[in-house]
Length: 163
Image 1: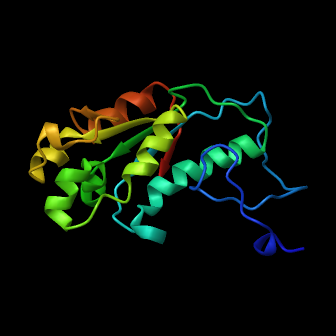
Image 2: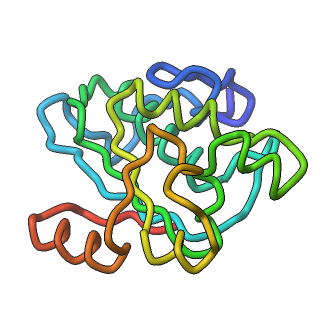
């Protein structure tokens, strides 16, 4: 049966980051591999139900790891959000004021946080877009800038995944 015909799965993050089960494939991580990663999210591309596609990819990564038997510890996966993607970190009330709808990313942010993902936002992007600190989802950490976060974490050996 082709992979596209198989049922999508969500072994680590329910309802997000669907994966297709695959057997006998190359580059499957071993349970002992260090698979920590830093995701840089800049795009505002929206997928199903308005959720940011790049943020959904973080859930997909966790689901891929879980399907391969790789466990992650809290903080093994980090996300830095900046540029046009910045508004995805808004609390529902602030998002509602700007876009006349609830923030479709709020449940995914909560699910990623429960899975141990650290979500950060660029302080320079929030300032530039007029986002007040109190309007940022409490599950998101405000950083000085995406540039400093990216440089500091890459110098510490964090592999970068871009959108």
